[in-house]
Amino acid sequence: MRSLRRLAVIVLVGAVAVVGTAYVTGFDLAEWEHLGKPRNVLVVDGEQIRIPLPEGPPERKAASLPVSTEGTYAFMFDEGEQGPTRYDPCRSLRWTHNPAGMPEGAEQLVKDAVADVARHSGLAFEYVGETDEVAGFDRPLFQEQYGEQFAPIIIGWSTEEQTPDLAGSVTGLGGSSSVNGAFGEQRFLTGGVVVLDTDDVTELMESRRGTSLATAVIMHELAHVIGLAHVDDPTELMNDQNSMLITWGPGDRAGLAIAGSGPCQ
Ligand SMILES: [Zn+2]
Image (tube, rainbow, N blue to C red; front, side):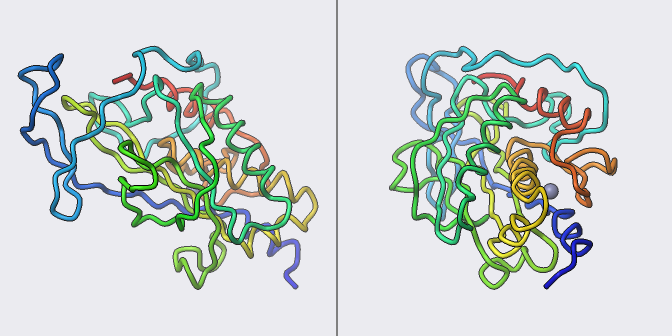
């Protein structure tokens, strides 16, 4: 039985895994409205796959949020003049959940965390149902079960045996891939992954304020998914040694608003 002090340490760490994705700009049949511009492709297992065209009109799904707080934040993919690499705010962030291994009662925490990140980022999340895909950072970005589009963000549960990066005090992992849009140089995030440690979250949920703390862990990992990196400031939820925080700090809030204010395709 771990002491509360030990429990605190478990919450404290949410590791980040960044997926580097190889890409090339290739020449392919351009869509008629982009005649003359090469369609970007991803090379997957040696095969060129055209980057899917964005669905729907180029209008934001939800209003962007002003940055109204000051504090520390950082982005995982900072592309210089282009700004940080972010999700396209004109498309819903499709997400799926694999409940295998989920602690009892945690489903609501997952939904609450997604709703919270949506609210604080101005990004629209769209639940597309459960999946049996095993969440991991080597997942293919294109999968038959998800059709022609990029695989949705996946939230899943694992153990230290199945996912060695969860070893020790790491409660969760989160990240996304950075890829080019269908045309041009602008890069976007896609294919996000959150892997949660079943044992650590179970233990956390049994502690005082457990459901809030566990929800905050999932929020932290989802913030990685939409591009935020760790910061040194211990009063921010994006600190990797974070203590018993259950909500965002001022820098987190600024970072989330910026994460939701990227360009549209
Ligand atoms: Zn983290």
